[in-house]
Length: 151
Image (cartoon, rainbow, N blue to C red; front, top):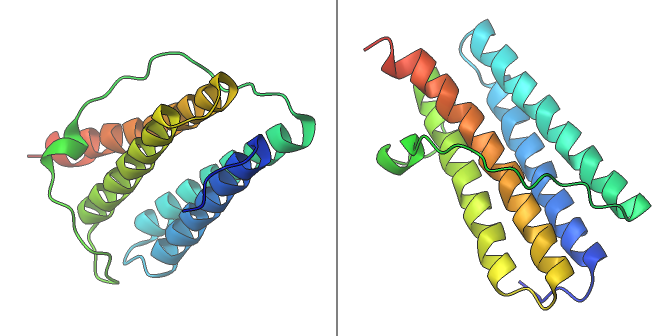
């Protein structure tokens, strides 16, 4: 990865990552085995589209309105085994995959915040990390509700 030289580079990187998430969830929706799974993944893709649009607005307007509130961490993603995506995934497996993906994005932005060349960049990376943390929490809550409570 090339070093970031300005805020637009950071935002372009984040927007590209959000697009990858949109593509990922859209693919999962297309290969979902049930209507419920398809609808869930379509909703996840829509949320990622919303995140991408929010980042584009930040880039366009130059206003960084990323929240700094603490996000709960259920740590479920820490205890489930990573799986590779397949067309035959169960809903549980898809949630694990999504949790792990969001956790990796969180860790990436945290690492970038530690290497940020300025306080402005650091704050932006920390805000992006927090967004990913919120995504992970949503999947952990769904996993807790759907998988852990049924067992």
